[in-house]
Image: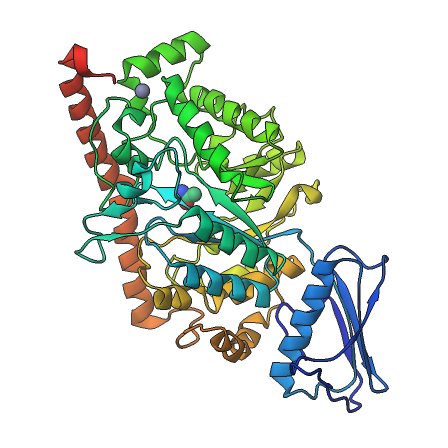
Length: 496
Ligand code: ACM
Ligand code: ZN
């Protein structure tokens, strides 16, 4: 019983025998009672005197009750003994993010990841659909986004072409599959940074109408969207408009992270825009443009989520949800913002990014992290947590499984319980057979690296950080300046 993940809020086993009975399909048979007193997504199960009764106030709670029964069935061989469980989640937002831009994962793999989520009672799938390394969603008005933007000549992991994209029909299938498991889907169109795949397809979206490649390397790219032209915002609205028929849930992610504002400094159109708006900094101009998209989403009944450093009108507009990943924001600022009314989703890169090496983000680090800091008084503004899997170094579904497990299992307990129990790591291993039934290949349970393997893992990570944080930026900066100077020497051609 104590092997369940997430461990239920309350459970009692009295040691008396109880064996599941089954319906014609082999599923555990139970009587269902709708009980309005049970919290949203919560459930109660009582197995005693030969009867099994499952209660909930909503369909999601019933679903989670069934998931618990399925897990108990697998963990106990169908004979759990008499028990009583009363359970409900601590957080309404229990997320997992899959980056399908850096590497494209086919529909079947995404469906499999949805199965993992359902088993772990996670309820929000965030699809990172666009980035410098690939545009993965069909937009009928802009076919080059996928015919050009979805393919790159090579990647750092594989020296051959890589690409692919989801048709709108594919995505509708993914959304329907997720909904049938009480999982919402949040699409992310990252803007105005992490945008070079779009610029590769439509050069006029950039500042100089330059022909750039869909990125073949990692790191932050200098080819960001031009925010001086009205046509760029119009493009984004067109994209969102088409997505509204595909992604029917409330949250839409507009990215906004890691924008290289310097690019705009050397663009006449962007400078004109800054002057016209009377903004002192580029982040204010970015906030203004973002705000226009946030309003557009609101007109369509959608709520915007953004990475924390791109808040429109910081300090005032609290309608936008921050996904906190620690980019340029310290915990004190976060606390102040949350206590002042900002709603947040917690995805601190350390320890929640699942692509980071185990020497940096161990399963134990996830257990020890408190998603709601002690100084946060408005606890309800922390909507929940999300565990992102960035895939720049994760080219296959099998490698993804190795990164996910056991960390996503432990993370799911943080999502359901608010904080995982200390023994979550040892229980996580017991879930491997259940995950394997869903097609997972989790490999050897690996919670943390030790000894020489720890040092090698860590050195590799520090080298990557040096490249990303210092060298990559310097090289990108020099390239961008050189390109801008070249353009400015040809005044008639610098703007399309
Ligand atoms: C991020 O990791 N750039 C959100
Ligand atoms: Zn520009």
